[in-house]
Length: 210
Image 1 (cartoon, rainbow, N blue to C red):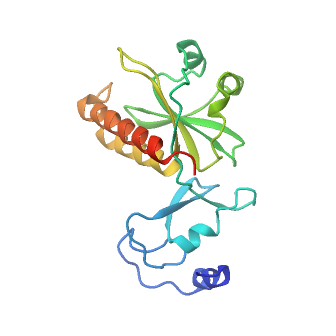
Image 2 (cartoon, helix red, strand yellow):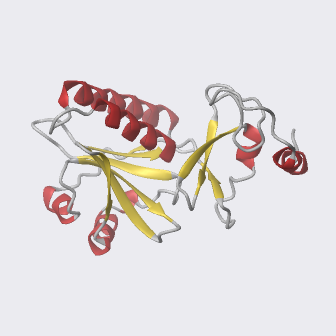
């Protein structure tokens, strides 16, 4: 097992020549493969690909750290129903968004897809607190590293509430930015949304809480 001192020595050692992205840890330059884990730069809100040893340095949720390890937790909340009045109070113009608490800003923000890509919205905090009060099951996301992804019912399709690692949500937003066409996103974007929710829901049922 690699000691913390060994990891710190690697962090301070001279870095080798650049290699293709995704092949080395972005902290210590150790070779990594796929899949690999991530940490979040809390202030810059940037994901970094890291090796297992570097990842373990930032798993303490109580410590005041610049980086935080992204956990591997997927939860579904099939009994939670956000009604239309609750959703409208959040002032989000579409029926799909993910929410996470940013510790640097000190409040929860929302991201949702649209023609300009991912749009960030600062939530009306009293309204968001009302949702967490009405649905306390949702008040479980670790700040900076986990997010709630909520989709409202539409044309007979049921809604969904999922808790996901923040890297899964960033991947979702990145793909949506590439696929979105026109005002409503287009067929390819909608197909990806259905596929993503099906995959994440299945993972949540099989993995549960870790």
